[in-house]
Image (cartoon, rainbow, N blue to C red; front, top):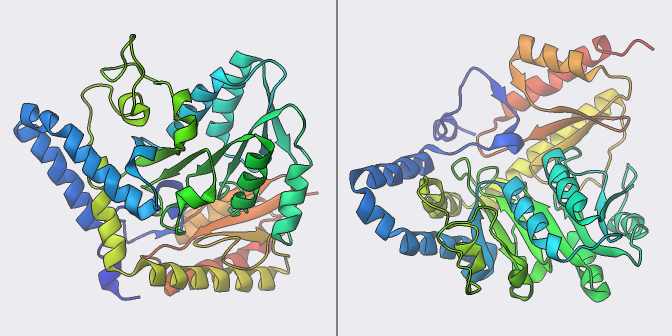
Length: 390
């Protein structure tokens, strides 16, 4: 990769930033579009607010085309956590005392809190079904998870790509089984848009939420929630604003109840089409394949050097640019993470899931092979120095 690509981003050059999965990185052209929209608002606020409806419709339509759905099934939200909150709030009208929401042990903490809060309001139970690691194939995951389904299961919630273990789960099959069983599905796709092609209508989820600011190159605070028409009647506002009326039900609840709540900065959403154009101009399928190849090679080198077993099948269907690298079970992750920070200025999450130690590597368009080589050498040199005292 040449330096021109790195120059397209605003990232500091004196750090090895291998943590795109946490916050994303907005390229200069997209960030400049975001700032232009902010300036347009400030120049003539009244005129700009008068155009909000048409401007947001355009942005929503371009996003819908990218996600292979219709804009009427999308609403813009600030992040996937807000999208999950939209779902949990909506399903309070469905869940009754004794009902169950089934999930995995691989979920993101903030979203688990949303479910626990709202299950507490309804008297329903939030059930974490164990899915053991390593996972060797799709069938093993689906079978293990489905063992948790009972006659009381009303909702299935899971990540499409998990945050703590960086695994991409076979959610289409889960959604298919759930639809047959009359179970509502809510999928957290925080890490998926940009990393994978999404055909939301074909995927089969009742509700799906994803970020535009992680792997899609959008500005921070841009995300979406997708809701199938058959369940949109469940949607209620998290914040009651101009879009809600006591005497009638909205025909566009994802706009009226989720987007429409007063003066705020919508510039990030209006720049999402520019993020999509940025990816398309750079032939993102090719970029994604290159990044996955770099992640795979790095993973195999490190696990080979440290003699650790992969936690998942080594293929694109299980991880793409967000990659789980298994470290020895005796690794002191706090000590190793601090050493990588202080000595090498390397930033990436060092995670512990049960007894598994995972370095969660992100390889994005701007990541260089030289950076990955430094990362490999740092781990190979210092993991042995960062062992827990047993």
